[in-house]
Image (cartoon, rainbow over all chains, first blue to last red; front, side, top):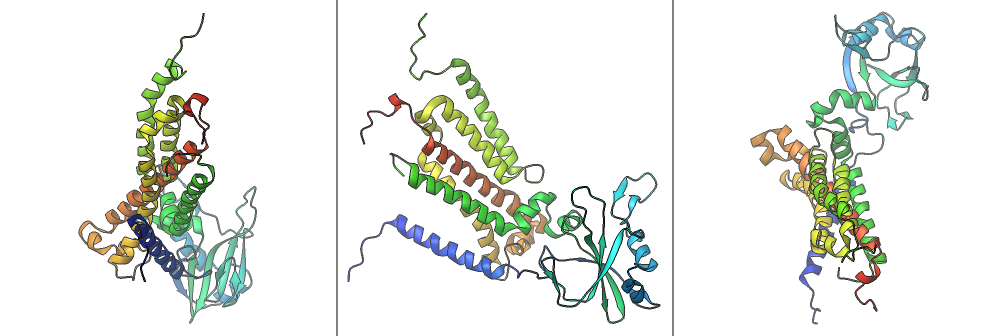
Length: 209
Length: 161
């Protein structure tokens, strides 16, 4: 059996196709599942832990964030207004009475694109936006083994705080485009190349390829 | 007063201005494409570079534009950009013995041991990925402009295909 003569360019194209297929399979293997709490988008930041005594859980169940947790959050600097003399104003949402809601979330709940692997309380804060006036998830207080751990999650806030530490890129937009969402950008670039190839195949009148 | 008969029937002012602006547009496009740490990015830089070439082709015509951006170079850039982008992922996967993820770019260990994680990571994201995006976007747009532009009658060169 004689194999037909194959051009070297065809072999190069074949090898390239195999490599691209392999990296696509690797990428699909590599992408975290939807709702994975350790994926870069959903990962929340632990702020501090306090002992769960003296009715903190009862207070949270009643819809009131206790003073201990509030002072802990305020001590970390998440307040509205200046943190020191002559500083510029911070614009974190406040935990004043009436501006937040507390909701208990069962373990294993699917909510907002994520699976809750711990049971706990979501603290939703209404910021008074004009166009999107919905209470937003800001803090998560989990109750594990007699200890209340306070987490803080929100995608844009997390980007502004942690992007340089995690990606070593000083530009938050670039880290989002090329790092956290690298597969998305790879697909966009492939779409552009495919569009150009489609125009070549459909519209080219004469000349060589 | 009959107009002077010129070979390409174009305006002198537009041609001189384009000749002056063309390298500056390309320089600004490169600045935007590589300056990922500041205000830049691959898509924007590639679009500015493509705009420079499209201006040149519009003013000087199809044939002279082909001299600035030949078809072979265009086809090379078009695929080289995607190769650079995917190559960043391939480098991380190969050098870390398939334990790295794409997003886990510090696993580019032979280099990151010498120069440190921040430098290697910013090289991969800022140069390989952004320049890759920019090259593909520029070459694709210029190629589409070449294919979609109507030639003038006397440029068809006999036609009859």
